Image (tube, rainbow, N blue to C red; front, top):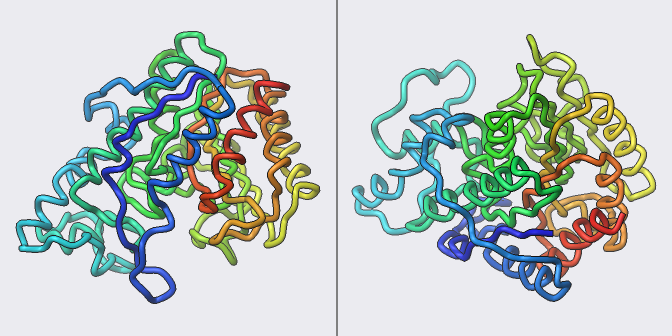
Length: 342
């Protein structure tokens, strides 16, 4: 399987506010490094660098003012005499206005963020842009006839919506790739999100559209991040009604129970009959993941890949979460091996 990868992800790593403390983000460069090493060890296939794309491609799913903010946030932060990581100070919660963008960088950071897990550093924009370009390069390969590809994206993307960042995500790589496939002629695309955390950003971007179906298996938002989206009754709206499917699952879910939900999800995807499938590949469903609560084992990821292959559709894997660094390479590559060997 073709892998698309860039070293530019090393330009980004910062601190987050978690458990009441400022600490280094769980989302770290070692995640992608470990996956790359496993791809090489398993001789999965060719590894290529991404193409470069204009900002206008990102604004197919994100607003122009949000992308401009990401481009300029660090320089605005520095202009205040600050050299440490930029994190939000305040958020526009209920009954506050969200139609007027603040001028001050402290206002902008909260205006465009859902949490304090999205630090902006000197290298963040270059890393984020490169990550989106990986997914776009993969989409181009799929649109060109390649049956499958793996975009080794970092930072991840599925929590980023059209106008906000969150959960280590800045640009929504999977959504940008899905939109690119539509723009290149696909009539119907599915985004299947298997990350432990609900892909709230992806859901929001496509919620009123019938041409991109969103399907997600994830920890129940009553107990798991992002808490405020991902419930079963969220089915889409307007023309998108019936094209959004959530499978919230309880803490402790193992493969025996996970695969029941997966089988139902795959049945819905088959009935939709998409031209292409984008997989938001999170492996934080692993039993030893430090910030998640499922119980999948290393070998289960081979089965996951096999089940995805049963769709028999052109498939782009886009890397999302997974924070047990020692095993992230094994689990991510097991999905890809399972898919290829099915």
